[in-house]
Amino acid sequence: MTEKAATPHHAGHRDRLRARFAKAGGDALADYELLELFLFRSIPRRDVKPLAKDLIARFGDLGGVAAASVEALTELKGVSEKTAIDLKLLQAASARMALEGALDRPVISSWSSLITYCRTAMQHEPVEQFRVLFLDKKNRLMADEVISKGTVDQAPVYPREVVKRALAHEASAIILVHNHPSGEVTPSTADIEITKTIIDASKPFNIVVHDHLIIGRETTASFKSLGLI
Image 1 (cartoon, rainbow, N blue to C red):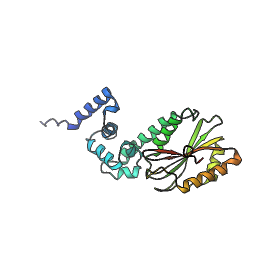
Image 2 (cartoon, one colour):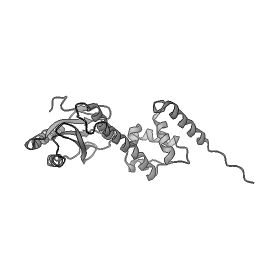
Image 3 (cartoon, helix red, strand yellow):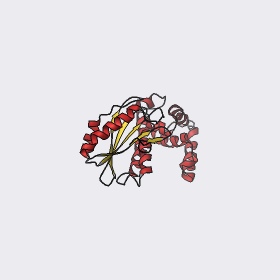
Image 4 (spheres, rainbow, N blue to C red):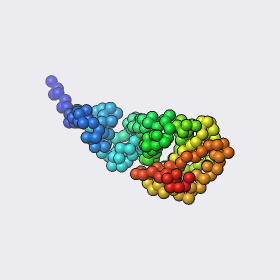
């Protein structure tokens, strides 16, 4: 007669963690514990606490894990391509929910939601990303697009392409957004020059550039607030 297989020690841990979340919500759990809960379904038959802690240590925080590329995630031992793709769902879902808070609403009344969306989508990006938000005649957010991606310190931007996309959306105004992976949000000379060029290129088409936001890890800079627009 074969002996009954011992119950894995992490089985009880999973039940206890789920119970804590059910009772007290996410605020009662550390980042790595929330990540554990997510990994339970992706990796059903292994203790994932060490992996969750390794992911947080490698990428800084929960947002950094979600924003990491599939390639970067799979470099970590224990992360398969399937698990990496599952983790990318965290960022996609977070960004989509943040966007819903700003979409089809006047930017003046939903400015904080707009900032939350931009930060959720961009603050952990490892390379510069240039995004354009398209507004209608009532200054409601209609859509946004990533116009370009670049390196850790620059992303090529072509004013003609920005105007072309604005016309395609029949936008009356736009907001420019890009991130600084370094965390420093002070506009560079290049940032100021490309903003002026886009403003000049947009004027003949009666497209207003409302603002240019720079997204850092901790803070956000606004050209309008800085008096640069």
